Amino acid sequence: MGLKDKKNTGSESGTNFFERVYEVAKLIPYGRVTSYGSIAKYLGAARSARMVGWAMNACNGRDDVPAHRVVNRKGILTGKHHFQGTNLMQQLLENEGVVVIENQIQDFDIIFWDPMQEL
Image (cartoon, rainbow, N blue to C red; front, side):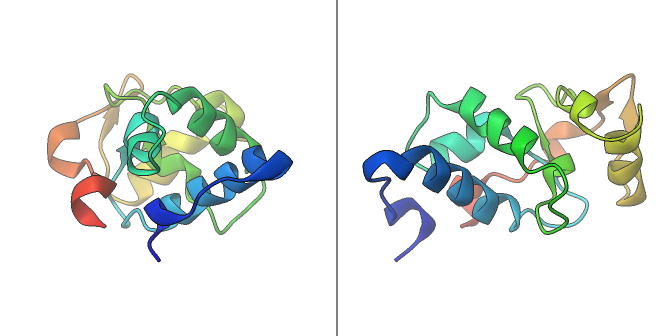
């Protein structure tokens, strides 16, 4: 059963959704990025990009989830204020070879990882 096939049930649906988001985020390759909306669409909840963002914000302190690799649909580091330090998200991306100028991922269309196509 793939990630897309797992359904949310009962009162734990928010928790289950967050865990499903984390499962996808863990698969984003080093040096690549994806968007909140792309993860939501892959999980069958295309209109839940904001909920994916909440999941990324809630995973603060989980070293196993590369939240820094999830950005908005335009490649802007909209979640950077949820990382310790002013520029930690950018620094983590730059350590992976991603070029960021003024909070904007450069060559976004080239390094974009789409779970709908990759998984």
